[in-house]
Length: 93
Image (tube, rainbow, N blue to C red):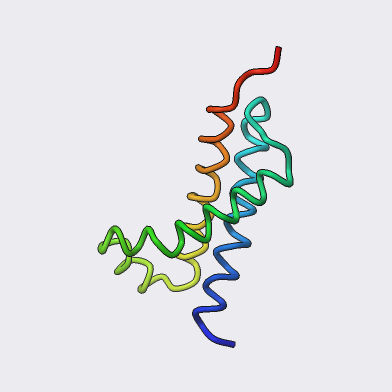
């Protein structure tokens, strides 16, 4: 399998997991498991691919750490996106 495809799959899975972990930690800001997963996957894929391009030092670190670094970055960004949206969500009456 193509290494770029493996990287995308890892980003999607890690981002989805990160989104769900964020939702589990802050239950009052959680958007539900499906929305947390989808937002986490979007954030993980975008962050895992774009963040190293924006921060060259991160790219060097990820190249040294391989798929593990990709998974970590994607999980972190995947957790941040649902948290931001959860914080911006209006409170229920």
